[in-house]
Image (tube, rainbow, N blue to C red; front, top):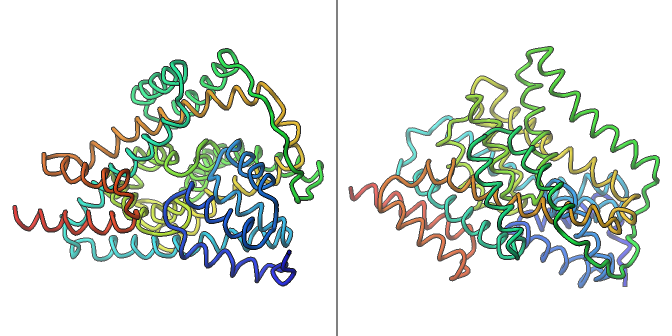
Length: 399
């Protein structure tokens, strides 16, 4: 039975705010929370309809769980509902990470160096867990493993945004050439009414921003526009969402001197301790910027810049999803892309995550314990983050 009391933006915001405050565990866990809340409990859409919505958002670049949330809010209360769903799910972790960034910037000397080292080490465990899980599900045969390994080597040789985008494009072409199309199963029509003209308009805006922002940033030499361009591009080109944004963001903000490698990895470790989408890591980066807008303003700019592509692409794709999901070339291209993004994440595990965190045998040992705690003991990420940070501080005080 549908509850008509939750068909206004405020109600949608409050529902997603509760999820934003309690949804620990990363993108896959978020999709599980959404299913329980909106399929089993609230009956906003059917089981098959929800599965189809998840497939659409995994097909698009960007953070899948946030895109599913946007679409759910859209289905319930239109465009204001989509914004309300995003805000409720995103703001709790974004605010927490901006506050953490301000704490590091203003009181960094007062924080124990061992605790910060622990945050870097836990990032190694988190990314290793993500590589392990994604490789098991996305690299299931020799061809996919080969694409993954080649992507890793290519990104390590050309560690910049252009190199990573090129790897994704080549992997898509290889997918079309190598893989056979999969059979499309029956599905329910999604309860989302977006016209084709509206979808095309959103897609036009997306490409205009993707092409126009770098040109404007170059012509004006504006640090703010350069920042918006970098985070918009990262949000536009990440297939797989979540942890996969790490290498693209690192390539955008570290070589430019906006963020040091050490701060980047420490912040990424801290991001594991908060609920909500991992893309809110952008808010931390924006708040700790050097030679660019920083603080609360920088955090807000980066947060919006990385999420805007998700909003545009979801609205753009909805009216054309029926054709996309049945397109054999799209399916095979996506298989190649998925294998390549595992390779991108594996490269990021080495640099910057491993090289910034593992310097001594005790670092490796602590990272191994954190990895086992996440993958095999099934401890919640926030507990592993806090435990690793405390252990890092203890070890530094003993040496």
